[in-house]
Image (cartoon, rainbow, N blue to C red):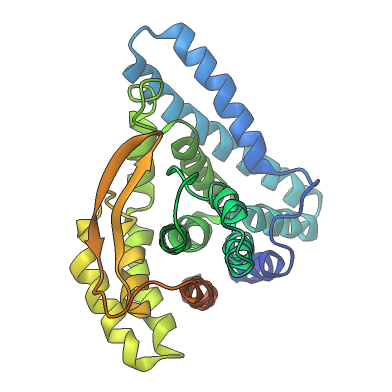
Amino acid sequence: MKTAFILICAWVLDALLGDPEGLPHPIRWIGSLIGKIENVARSLFENKKIAGVMIGIVVPCIVYLCGLICLELFEAISPALGFLVGVAVVFYCLSTRCLADEAESILRRLREGDLIGARRRLSRIVGRDTAHLPEHEIVRATIESVSENTVDGVIAPLFYAALGGPALCLAYKAVNTLDSLIGYKNEKYRDIGWFSARLDDIANFVPARLSLIIIPVAVLLYNPSRALTALRIGIRDGRHSPSPNAGNPEACFAGALGIQLGGSCSYHGVPSDKPLIGDCEKGIERDDIARSVQLLWRSSVCGLLFFVMLC
């Protein structure tokens, strides 16, 4: 029951506050730790793949142990204090409000005709090149980011918090942050980041499959006629993505919205053609961003209820 209350309180805080600027943030501390461990690993190992394995193992273990020790210490001082710290940890691992705010900021700039501003805001949440994207590509990239991060920023943190408490939730975010910082296939990180990228794939495997249940259920609650389509497209097209996990929520969102995702884009000037996901029932339009944000919130609520019942 304690874990369930932690999840509920953390979710409410995230919904109300998002990611308030100026406050200490453990994810930033994890990023700093990754930088330090990376420097040590590069100096210790000539073989960068072995260095990558060291980074991928050491960082989550340090984060988990530090989180567990801190939580136990606060719990020993006062159970109420331990509860509040647990809530704070899970709160910092969730990002429903932050993701929704970023997507709505992009939509607002599109409605104002500010393509340059929309591209700049989009670059904050995607890794692809955004400098010359037309409006429909900005919309597509935003929806793909919202759908993918429904797993990374909502379902997976709730899953790991329910499974092993706030410390395990924090360790998951360490894995996720490792992939974000060094899990690239460019020259600098291809070897040293390979293990972190695979570790993130493993960590998100179960949450991504749970999204095939959670997202269609969220659709069922407000648009029953689209729920089966979201499930069908999720199962049919989820496996087509080059990512073993991202395709599942993307396909569910595509089915729910009646649009087609995927296609051409570029990363650091290198073209990339992703498989098409979903059926093109209609063209992508800017208001699909608002619909994707609504689905994000509903999926977040359904995910919360799902994992609270499992606690």
